[in-house]
Image (cartoon, rainbow, N blue to C red; front, side, top):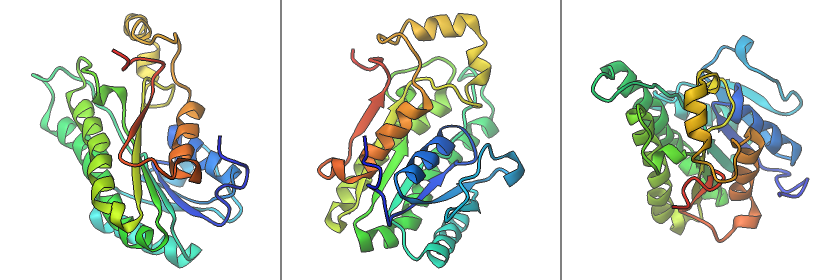
Length: 247
């Protein structure tokens, strides 16, 4: 666990921070002293919480490279520096691969995978100045095949491997890039699955520890990878999965 002041004086962008896992990560960073720039495509009226104080909210469409560049410029203008990025923005669409629409497939890839790349590109000049850190939010679905999630699984495999590629390329700049891979987490995105008894029975049978991951489980692992305790960790994915990927 990061110390209470381990992010004091640091500025972090969290994408997809309007609700769910992103909001929890933003809250935990703020508790540990970071100034958090929370970014989301949602209108502010739909955000689940507000950090207040020195923190800031920003509109972001990760599908647009210009939107990502503008976000970084706005954060620098408001906060004067940038130290950390959490690439959390993401969506899921479920369908049989033979039946998935072009829009559902491309929307997921554009937001989850391409958006992660655009944001990483946009923060690179600023993170290079401070030897900053990036954490991508992956999934066990990007490691182990799951039925009816072809676009989501492909995108999450991509963001986890992207962490390796960027870590290798940007190590010379002192930038560390890692990922986390949660199993199912209660959130707005997974709400339809949580009430599907057959799905949940099958899903829980794959988790040796016998429970879902909580949003706080994910946030704590993200903070570890962002912070000084993981100074020699880069290009890795930590699976927050209760043992799903053991085999």
